[in-house]
Amino acid sequence: MKTTKKSLIACGLSVLVCCALLVGTTFAWFTDSVTNKGNRIEAGNLKVDLLMDKAEDGNYTSIANGTGDIFSEEAGNGINWEPGKTEIVYLAVQNKGSLAINYNLLLDIIDGDPGLIGSLEYAVLDGKKAADVDANSWEELEAMEGAQVGDIQAGQTVAAPNGTLDEIVNGEENETDYFALAVHMKEDAGNEYQNGSITIDMTLIAKQATAEQDGFGNSDYDENAGYPASVDVADIDSLEDALNNPGVPTEINVTQSITDGKNLTVTGDVTLNLGNNTLNRGSTIVGAGITVEDGGSMTINAVANSGLVYTAGALTADGGTLTVNGGNYGVSGSGDAQVTAKNGSEIYLNSGNFSCSGYQGHAVMATSGSTITISGGSYSVSGADSTALYADGGTIVVDNCKFSAINGKRYAVANGGQILVSKTFSPDKPTSVAAGNVVTDNGDGYWLIAEN
Image 1: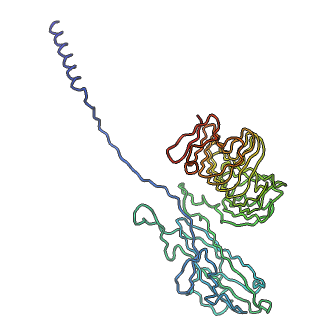
Image 2 (image 1 turned 180 degrees about the vertical axis):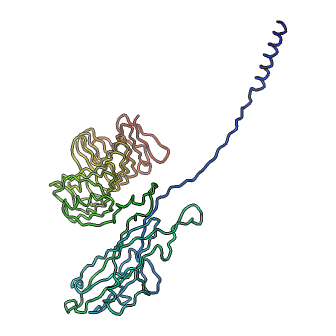
Image 3 (image 1 turned 30 degrees about the vertical axis):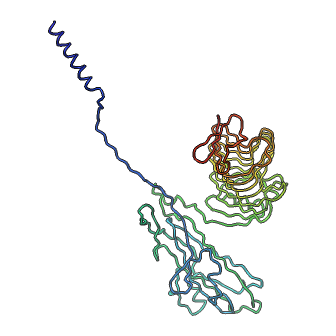
């Protein structure tokens, strides 16, 4: 027993010695790791160019956004027309982007005073360069005519010299379509056309073609993409149609105030050019409300009228995007808001006057994860317990603005909302903040207004 006891004591001491030796020792395990950085997703771009062979020597140069290029007086083909005269200009459409396109060339013939429009005829010669046209009469030219619509594949994508970005290289033939525009003055044009004139405006429009695949092998996912359109409207029915044309970017020019307007919805991708025209509901102080929804996008360009003349009523983005450049907007009512963003929407207020009168009213309100960015404009409320800018679960970013006629607070947040106020706009900590809200420095050039 004594021997066993001694052996156990000796073993115990050995264990203690081993533990003492292990104090401060770090266990090591076999490990390994790999890293893959810099994975980049970049959107493609759709870009077209309109070119002309001015010297008819095969060298094409861009005339995009030019004026008076195709029938220049310097070249002698824009003046002194007479019966039987024919002129041909050689043009091309080039795909300068990374996506395949469908395109259409539109000709807008504007008659002069006196005019020439009844004396002229036109032909588009598809696929023709100067070297391809060998005709001795107008009839022979007409026989070459083809509709000037088409599709062009994207250019070849190659690595840029620095190896970090891609660039599009356009080949001479594969990404360019050639055509000629021929104009002929009829042989039987009479004396009534002497000293007459016309102007020809050319517009090249393009849209996505069904070429690229969507990741599931489907190349028809963008088959509903439409050509951009420009329309003039003077009545409520035409306006409603233009506002709701999904897939077609549309520029809407309102040519007169629409006084029988009802509240409007927007589901298309539109730019609304109002000038100083208004959308109201029978009275200039009762504007028609506008809601951008279902993924729609809208930009309003307007000029504010003096006095209580409202460009439109309440502006709302509910699952869409809204941008406002100018105008005068106002609503009245308890708990109302002049501008409201809902359900993850985005609103950009660059200029304009925005006001709300009524108990607990708001000039601007961001809710449910939406964001409103304010870069300019004037904001006012005049009701009791009202707030100019109210972030109720959303975010408001203030880079610049003006507050006027405030009867209430400038800033308030609730339900996890936040307001970021640029230090460039407000070097000092913002005041006129609702009770229960605190202002802190977010360390990134903004004051952060949040719940206490």
